[in-house]
Amino acid sequence: MTRRTVLCIRHGESTFNAAWRVNPVDPLHFDAPLSDFGRGQVLQVRRALARYPVEIVLTSPLTRALQTAQGLFDGHPNAPRIQVAPLLRERVENSCDIGRAPAVLAAEFPSIDLSQLDEAWWHREGRPDARGICVEPVSVVQARAAQFRDYMLARPERVVALVGHGTFFFYLTGKALANCEVAEFPATSV
Image 1: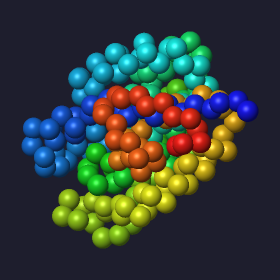
Image 2: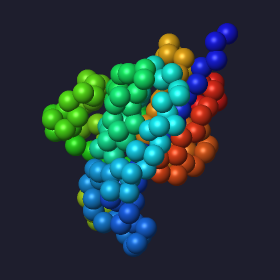
Image 3: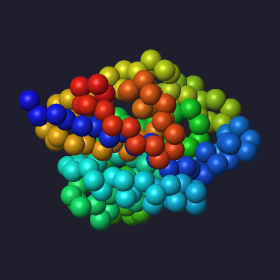
Image 4: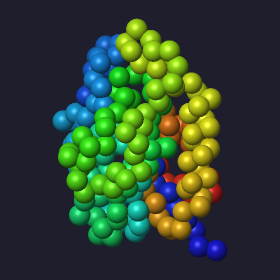
């Protein structure tokens, strides 16, 4: 049996992460992009990932993850395809977890396969809070992580990179990841 590897990579620091560190109140950075520091993190990690024979990159459709995936894998020796996986999105808890329409993302990321995205692909059910955000229940995120796990186990690739988010990766793997941290797992343990 061939060993399959999954690389879980949390996005680099976003403008939301940077603002939250200074004052832990939602700064209302909807679909927050990478900060300057986050872009630097991506450049540092990029070299380390060149040694992995990545066959496909699955990424969250949130901008900070798309920027991280593109920054890490454009020019990678294996030239893996980058594809959006909507199930890999972050739990909607704050403004940064609210996404943008596929047409808007396609204009900014023309080389990334966005064909899996619905028009409004983030969690929108329930009653909005004072910020206008429908916070995603933990049970919904846990079910989505289980669905994504099944999706991963059915994939044919031997080395898959996932670019996503701290809370979602915690529910998927049980491990908390720092910004731009790479965690390697056998596919059966994800």
